[in-house]
Image (cartoon, rainbow, N blue to C red; front, side):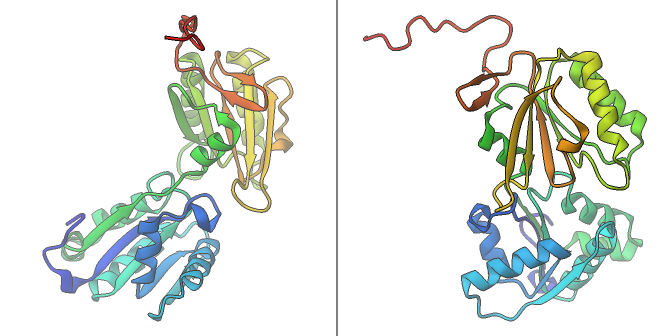
Amino acid sequence: MVNGSANPAAGRLTIAGLGPGALAQVTPEVAAALQHATDVVGYLPYVARAQALWQQAGAAQPVAWHASDNRVELDRAQQALALAAQGRQVVVVSSGDPGVFAMASAVFEAMEHAAPATSAAWQALDVQVLPGITAMLAAAARAGAPLGHDFCCINLSDNLKPWPVISQRVRLAAEADFAMAFYNPRSRSRPEGFVRLLELLRAHCEPGRLLVFARAVSTPDEQLTVCTLAEAAPEMADMRTVVLVGNSTTRRVGRFTYTPRFYGVPADTSSLGSTP
């Protein structure tokens, strides 16, 4: 059962988001879950981040740390579910929010596709998903409010979906004039993906469209670059970068980038600053 188990002795599985990087941006709810965990499961750098938070909090309860490499999400999910079924208090950690291109879907996928008896036992567990601040929202906050109107979020990795699907979604989003947020824009193994993205955007958006390149937001390595589509270059992005693309109304005011709340018809600002 989600958010409340009929059999507490079966253990608990918490799927938690650690935010974009800074420990200060981890929610108190997630921090409390880590302090009560017997086992923490996750990708190597995220487990390290959870350990730092656990040590900072001075938690007394010993924890078993189960760190693994990238691209083994289903293995991690199965391990976490199995540990919880043994009565353990398990926390699966993800960066950002666990429901945004992260471990929450993997856990439920593992639950669905397990053998019938195992699947039934796992579905009876106390499972809760704790939200976190996504890199997309952290990046937008640093820039100002580039996602201030309708927007969409697209993962550019073609590991789990083919490029034609990505291309179609980008094209339709651009034609609909959504602001857009792109995760996993450019890796060493597939640098051509971001090149193709820029080509798509240039085919459907004006050269002056504003882009925000937000790298490692909230960490000491943070870099924030705002430029036009005409100025954007593939090497400005890597796998630690979230790329935000404004809609046709997105503009700059001072050092901030924002998308107005109105669309198409300017808002009536004649009364701003007037005395009632």
